[in-house]
Amino acid sequence: MNTPETSMARALALAARGAASTQPNPRVGCVIVCNGEIVGEGWHQRAGEPHAEVFALREAGERARGAEAFVTLEPCAHFGRTPPCADALIAAGLRKVWIATVDPFPQVAGRGIEKLRAAGIEVEFGLLNEAARRLNRGFLSRIERGRPFVTLKLAMSLDGRTAMASGESRWITGAAAREDVHRLRAEAGAVLTSSATVLADDPELTVRLPGEWRQPDRIVLDRHGRVPAAAKIWRPGARRFAVVSAAGECGRYDADVVTIPIADAPGGAPLAAMFTALGGHAINEVLVECGPTLAGALLLAGQVDALVVYVAPKLLGDAARPLALLPGLNHLADHIAVSFENVEKLGDDLKIGARVASRGV
Image (cartoon, rainbow, N blue to C red; front, side, top):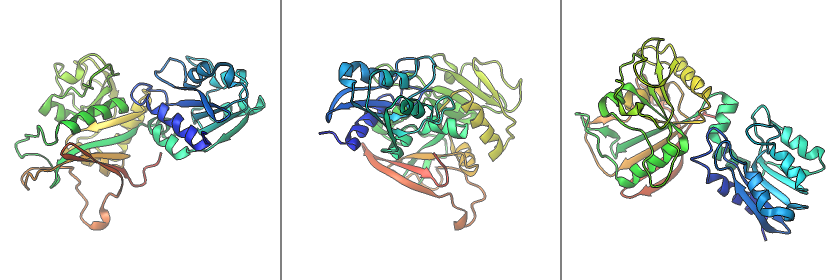
């Protein structure tokens, strides 16, 4: 017998299957239960394709009449690229709809609930709300805050170093950790780095895992247009963005240009404006892969929501390069607080997930 909690948990597990493919849409799962038995289930697989409710209703067929639906996000009530899911649930004759969290998208924002209730369907929302919001933290961040959810990825030795003094850094971590980074790129849907990193390493910042994957948007903070047109990061296969400090600073490479008045030493306001601009391009999440200068600037500017830190069982010594440059933190009270969320072992390395204090969503 399925309880409301287990049914919604199943819907969340289904929604997570679209973690790397639904951008810029949210990740949504749906389960239909009749007399304690799951008779239909589905998840949103790609933007522009049917939503989770449609797949679940197709599987349930006539068994949906008088049944209960468990949906991780409020059903849409407007015509977009697909018809309203609230209408589909009403037409199927459901008795009750459980919703994990309300959709803040302006064209939904409670209208789906209102439409269901007006049709005589009982609605209850809030079941596993925290887990549902965590699953869609990028989408919710873009809609509620007007900017993507930002995760800073770092890889370091046990003594907090990221590269030797010469710049040599391949590879601090092992194969399992590096493969996990590819998954992070896929799920974020956008990767940001600095011109310094591109000039030093010429990274691709692509997903290179078995199977077919949507390649993430690639973003370069290239204030003065230093990155050459031949850099791997500009290769086709995904959207490319160059963030420059003034119009005309670039143009020789094939990328969309985001012009933000960023000074030589990035400050909080310009960096915040950069992420707001990226949110305007329907970017839900950004994974930052960069060196210690930009990492420190983002942290000091309060622009990082979460950290993913890979720790290798190595000691590189005090001459090696630090994790992040954080000038101005002269007293213990000046620290940047984080809260640990999870720790796991990947091969010989540790992966630590943390949230930066006072960053909502």
